[in-house]
Image (tube, rainbow, N blue to C red; front, side, top):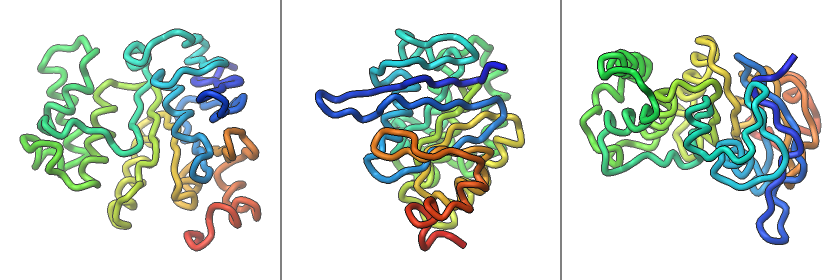
Length: 240
């Protein structure tokens, strides 16, 4: 059986520094798969390589199709949507304009896109209230919701979420994880990079541990939650 996303021997180097070292993993349809690891482990580098922003070697297969040489914008069209670390919204554009930019490759009519906008606003009511505000005036949590919704406007087959809880207050973090669970229930496939390992593993089907550019552990979310090694290295005081 082929996986929706199959990564084989993915490597990224910056000069003499090997940021990713022959990483292999897979994501099946309708799964949440989480990557945990410390700062500098290569997690964001991996996400950028998958979305085509970072040059890499090895294979990235989307439903069996090799994406070697496929530029980032075409990967969006094939179904890979990347919500980057730090959100990266367009601050001088309105909320609605940011969302429409997420649909720039779509061929539907404005009316069909309006229906999709409404679906986004139903999931993120605060964005509806702020649809005509500049994105730069939003709180960090609202910008994160906007970045997720902008990615959803491309109608992805897989959503790459890079540190969605970064810098957010605990109540907003809880809301972001609730949204991720809802997306899974709606059938979305998600590859999640997250330092809040306890919360991320609790909602994950499977997970991998990335250390200094290499996969060192894998298992179900519950298996990694129960692992003494993972608990000592990554859960610590966050473990309930």
